[in-house]
Image (tube, rainbow, N blue to C red):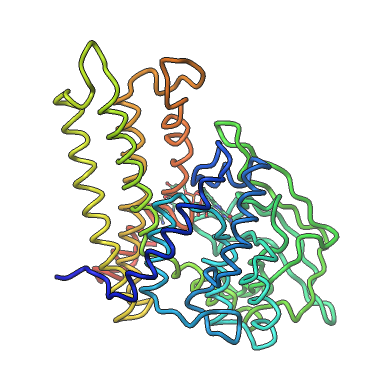
Length: 398
Ligand SMILES: Cc1cc2nc3c(=O)[nH]c(=O)nc-3n(C[C@H](O)[C@H](O)[C@H](O)COP(=O)(O)OP(=O)(O)OC[C@H]3O[C@@H](n4cnc5c(N)ncnc54)[C@H](O)[C@@H]3O)c2cc1C
């Protein structure tokens, strides 16, 4: 199999690479790829927004969208190359919720007026979005949600509570799932709305993570009035649109590229650092752990290519079981990697301020923050259920 890019694709890869290499030199010292840093720290958020503007000016936030909505008509492979390079450089500027989740949903499910109103501002990095789906009693079982939207003339009046809303304290707009028909069972009574986060009745309260960082929020909706024209798709058909949202995004190449960079930096550390008079790079246990990471990252990268291939050949829904497998592989791989890095570095991995701790507790922080990756956007267990039902053809078990 030949994985080489064509000369045009290679030129594009180089253009992305040069851009991120240069621009990421200006990142704040606390910058990582973690969502916690982006949304929790003012300096990182400012940098993220500046980078978004630069990416927007190049048209790279909206590569595969049609031109009429601010896109570039690029191929899935070109988008893949962008994500690959961005992941490696821990690149800033892509609003995961607006660009990766909402925009493709709007392209499929929104009406013409909604596409024209909402897609161009996302492509120009003028508005940032948050996802208002999970509730205290509805996570994996999202169809159990109880937030209620009642029609009143040209608007809906919404009451309820959302939780785990990433970056809601920074967002301009949110995409919301609410129950419009309580008579219908579960997913059949839900609708999908777009809501301006400045609408009266919306209260955003922080939920701090175990390391003290601020990514999550609770969002309370008290008599929030949403214009009826902000409903995406038909009333009570919101589940269909939400399934589209869940099916996008998914080769996981950015995470495997990020791991490649992490491994390179860990190797450098092991080549330079001595324990008990010997370089870590000479220790047989350390060497084997590094070799194992090398194997897994290569497997992951190859798997990402196969997801891309599946999406190009069979479409996003056909490739869903492959994408679910890639998500499990990538997110659990990050967790294994950070655990391995902490083990290699030993107790100094946890020390933030000491001359004996040149990495300043970096891997310990990443170890804590990456726990959420295998839950966000569907837990590993839910992904395995999907593989069983859609990939292996087993009967549904829930
Ligand atoms: C980093 C991060 C970011 C997030 N951002 C957002 C956001 O921006 N907006 C938003 O709306 N939500 C967000 N979420 C919430 C996320 O969607 C939920 O955490 C996820 O759907 C799981 O729901 P839950 O936490 O209620 O766990 P539960 O659904 O209560 O699950 C608890 C455990 O039971 C297991 N389980 C549940 N059902 C099954 C089943 N059928 N089969 C096998 N095992 C099962 C789960 O795998 C899990 O281990 C985020 C979560 C994280 C961690």
